[in-house]
Image 1 (cartoon, rainbow, N blue to C red):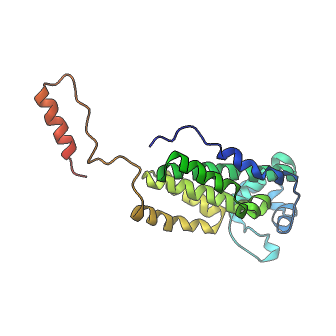
Image 2 (tube, rainbow, N blue to C red):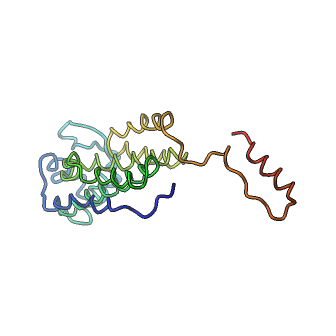
Image 3 (cartoon, helix red, strand yellow):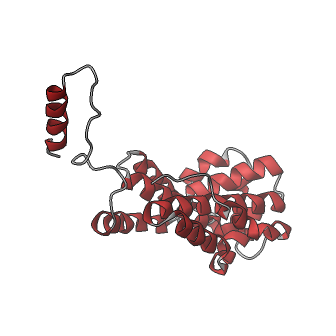
Length: 221
């Protein structure tokens, strides 16, 4: 199935753009605003050696990719809350486009557009998109869907996307269940080798071309 041009769901993902007026709130204070780990660019790689919560809190958790993005945003914006919120919105737009691409495989183009649009504006995402620390959920969702798309095509990059999802938030482990469910319940998006027939070679006699097509179609998996 052809995917066609990107849908309008990317614009609907911007429905959370009003979050740009937000400041730091609740857990944003400890994880970002007063956390020296994300206040220097070196935090991009140091995040992989530290816990998500500052060590002084003893709360633990390991979400280095999320923390690395906060460090990058802080280096660019100098800690501007509007910039960090804008990054959250853009991650949400990316997740919406990935949902649309997955639904293109599973439904009609119109169904994919409707499903991705509902996902884009659904209020269940408010906390994840509008609250800065909710970025871990959004990044995790984006890489989990990307991993599932790659897995369904038997592409090795699924492993990298899965690792990125886990490094964003531990709930990325749900990819394993999604992959098993996809293999058992959903159609394979790739063309079947059993039905792929080689195109005829005009340089061969008719009998030879027919024999070649017959052999190609009969080749076992």
